[in-house]
Image (cartoon, rainbow, N blue to C red):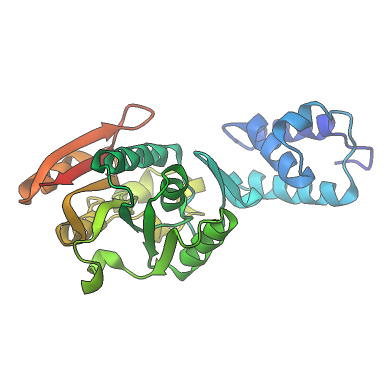
Length: 293
């Protein structure tokens, strides 16, 4: 960029063209996000401040953001924020970026809680990451309490920060542990809902078919589900009957090519009265919902 005055309009136009040449699928949107992050303006405010010149500090932030995005780093890591349903989350390297498909999982979990009709339901999340699922449940349904777990200390710290920013301490407990290995005695049979977005991509698919922007930046721990993508799901299915109350629900997001196999595993296990697979926003099979008898 030259030493000339860089206005909002000029840098937005330049960044869009640059990111398009770098292969960004949504260069204009990326440019807007980066500029909002650098200036503190909303996307609407950008368009009513086209002639506003950027300060030297804003230009430095913008240059660094454009450099990182142009190198292929996910936009959510560059800006450090991610909107999800009705909340905005801090999103840092080392934790899976929330995706629109997971909003469908939250819908299924909320429906399951509503069907129970309890005034103060208790939910358990395995693999909370940013906390997007647990925090959405707690913020969208009064009375819900969630215990959100993750085996990554970094994810636990990030989810706790997001919880505190949303003033949901006391409603969502964030705990570092690997509950996929078993439920502590004190928690057995207590939960009305068990929800998870576990690692579910088959190892071979992750190695050869997943875009570099995902596999090169997002944590493999949150992506790789083993040979068939169901390694962690099998562990969740083992503990579900011990964790859930009678009539409690299991809601899990899985890979489109293995969610049907996961549903069959549930049907083979005694004690389930209802099992179904739901489609995501692109009409791909994605979310498994099962209810205890």
